[in-house]
Image (spheres, helix red, strand yellow):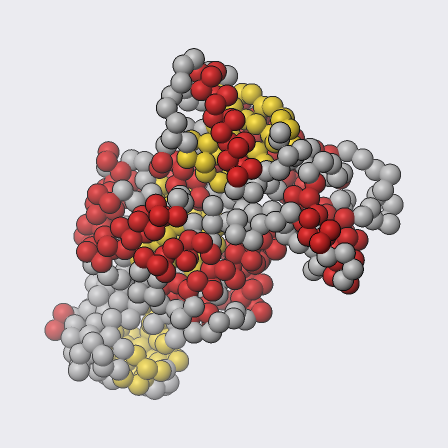
Length: 566
């Protein structure tokens, strides 16, 4: 339970800080407001109850009747006193793959360990995955493992002088991009190789080519059978094998390269929990990955990374086919104008929220912490806004893979997420999600809505869900309760995969199956309540919402109860 390490009851904190100015401000946040709301009642206003210290966070703002009032009542002295609900994805690399570092990362807040298959061979990743699992077992934590594919990339060739060579491209000069293999290792100031054979077919005169994450831009002036003559719009140092982006161009690269297929089979053998699929452009790309995973990998979740114009245009089809989405802002910010990236982020997160599918926000979230111990103010706001937008997970890349401060970075992200979650206008969000569709709801959805509504009304400390596949827990997560969703399951893979969904904390139950089923159910409920108290989620007197089925088997969730913690 790596999201717990700074969780304390806000009310207890107030009692222990009775005379400081900060304490007075915190205490004021718990008192009735003077804006005419005092005489109003009902669940929408979240009136205090026994055990209300769990929800001291932004209590006055939570009583607001509209978004503007909610924001005006946010208080920097209010404690975010519940556990972090947003999951943290950490890329594991040279700076973080050692056993002791992994343990520190997990204690700081790591939930999902990402293996970037653009770098390293299978032996390297096999050893890293083994270290992740050893560390998780040593700490008795449930940690997910994700495989991030290299994907269908376009790259330049080698320069004359080898892999470490660099050339200085001058703005205004001419540069030929060639697909002729004889130049694959002979790049120079006049001509460089590009490994996409059809670049001359898809590019038109006047269009722009970006190289090395957009640092270098080239304008096409002339086309040949196997080359493009370009003008350098923005020059700079260019090394070997740099990435190439063709903005607003539909490329015809295959969804999976031969390398990707080998990596996916390796992932199946290693039992990874999810695949982060790079450069997904259409529904068929997701289907190709699912087919490659085969029967042995049918339970591996596919998270599609949206990184280009085509993926944006076909987003709804991709979302329907995928198990979740990653807003991959790195390449996306090259493919589309920089000032449009935040629009893409908000749109994709909102559509995932409506569909009830997890969404990860990624790339450069705390980039400065690769080399510095503190983030910039803009980075802090970026992480917070991703949480406020509705992301289930936030991701760290180079910050934890190669940075100087991987553990400190995770700790900073953990603290930002908790503050941002406390600032969400939960009631308004819940109502928006509840009324997003006027269709007749399936039973499990109806029960999830009722459970979240009851959690608000009773200021519940947690929602406990007994689940096998995780479906019921995911449905509860969709409606964004402001308390943890304690998901009790015997299935280890389900336990790990639920990290993708906001608020889901897995309780992996290893007890034997008891007969009759009712006895087994009561035993698991009792164990979950005890475990919740043990890890600090629950306290005597708190309300807990319980969601279960009415008989053994899948798909029978139809019973909700409200219990008091003894």
